[in-house]
Amino acid sequence: MSFSTLGLSNEIIRAVTEQGYTKPTPIQMQAIPAVLLGKDLLAGAQTGTGKTASFALPLLHRLSESSHNDHSEGCVPIRALILTPTRELAAQVQESVYQYGKYSNLKSMAMFGGVGIGPQKRRLRNGVDIVVATPGRLLDHVQQGTINLSNIEYLVLDEADRMLDMGFIRDIRRILKLLPKQRQNLLFFATFSDEIKALAAGLLNHPTMIEVARRNVTADTVTQKVYQVDGNKKRQLLAHLIKQDKWYQVLVFTRTKHGADRLVEQLGEDRIQALAIHGNKSQSARTFALTKFKSGTLQVLVATDIAARGLDISELPYVVNFDLPNVPSDYVHRIGRTGRAGAKGEAISLVCAEESKLLADIETLIATKLPRETIIGFSSNSQTKPEQIPDKRKQLKQGSQRTTSAGAKSSLKSSKKSSTQTKGTKKPGTRTSR
Ligand code: AMP
Figure 1: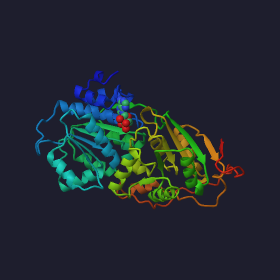
Figure 2: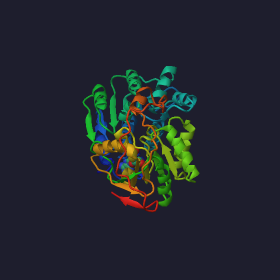
Figure 3: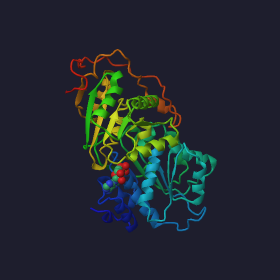
Figure 4: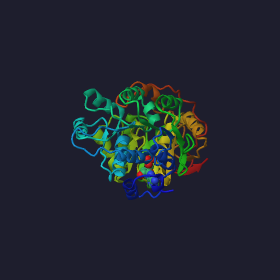
């Protein structure tokens, strides 16, 4: 099957061909015809499956078919709204929309917080057809009367499950009230839940349902491994692995913003170049770190879950869970940063005894027992307490992305110390597998 058999216009086919796409991915094969027919969509797709093009291409096609040719000031109503959970994802999706639509005369813009609102207002005044926004900044524009949503014909909720996890449900409800009733709705999620079911029930009208991968499974192209490590030796083990195995382009996840900053500092002491990306960093610092990392000039990017969701970094070879996430489905999203679009990747988790319950929950979710390895010298009995595990859901319910606090109290009690640790009788750095 080719893009032309799906019924897309020559302008769009030309643009995707220039992107190097030769044939549609499974989600594209299913979603594109449904969207072209005007159907609502409920689509479950693993990250890296080509889901952005699966909604962007048919939207561009439909919008072009009934394009308002006059793009002079004030003459263009906003006709499509794409909501994403994070600023980086909004920027990435808008870039894709721009690339796929470069032979159309449609205009798009990204709209997110952390940067000046002035240029966004000017852009709106000049007229745009498609807005890709995070909910908070979109509502800022609504409040200031700088955006008119009464002509929206298409609404996309990208990574809807994440938006709900991040506490955006009230913002989303407020936005929905501002949209015309008659419109086409496309809802994308990575992990299905009762909350998604409820949102879909209230939003979608006889939707086409698509699911291209089994729920909660990880990409086959990712090799997963667990290193059992003493809590206070994680940093040394990470530095050891990076140096010994000459890892480059490593995305490391930590549980907290503070933990991310501290790890960057410590890696610096080990002469490993690293930058952090999280909610307390300025948008310019986030953009700088991500651009450097994407272009291959930064060895290690340390991120919290909020900052990294949905990012597409081509052929990212390594993802490391420095801490395990306390929401098991986040594990799937984290390691989905590697092995994207068929490329091979490695996902490594550094797991201390206190995280054994989190590991067990993850293994239950993905229905896979992850292979364990121990490196002698990095896994011995330690009395050191690990960093407290905050209850992320509680934090997120307290506010949106902009108000998330890092200091919530742990709801998880440390589990008993495992008795499976390897005694350090061999030379440090020797691997043993389980
Ligand atoms: P997404 O899941 O939308 O983040 O896309 C993941 C990656 O797949 C991106 O780098 C896209 O450029 C790429 N991609 C999307 N569709 C195709 C396709 N039909 N053929 C090859 N690569 C694609």
